[in-house]
Length: 70
Image (tube, rainbow, N blue to C red; front, side, top):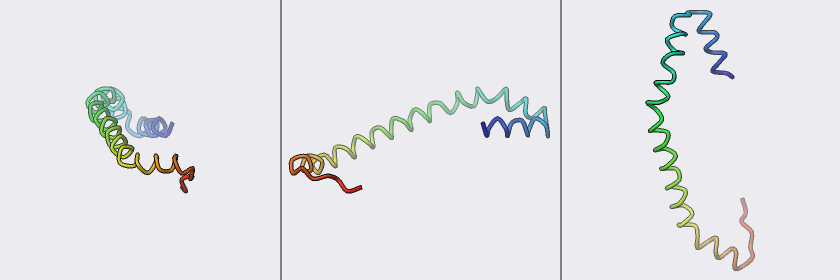
């Protein structure tokens, strides 16, 4: 919603620039899509590594019946 309001403000101030931005937005989104996918994959791998590292502590907590203090 905020982005739309900014675009409306840009449209009022300088409508040719707003129309160019509207036309180029899908192209820029497509160019940035691989970086977003790489970010999701790297985040998943880091989460997996964290879970593997903390697995012994989790198992010990399950065995002893203690709850984690967050």
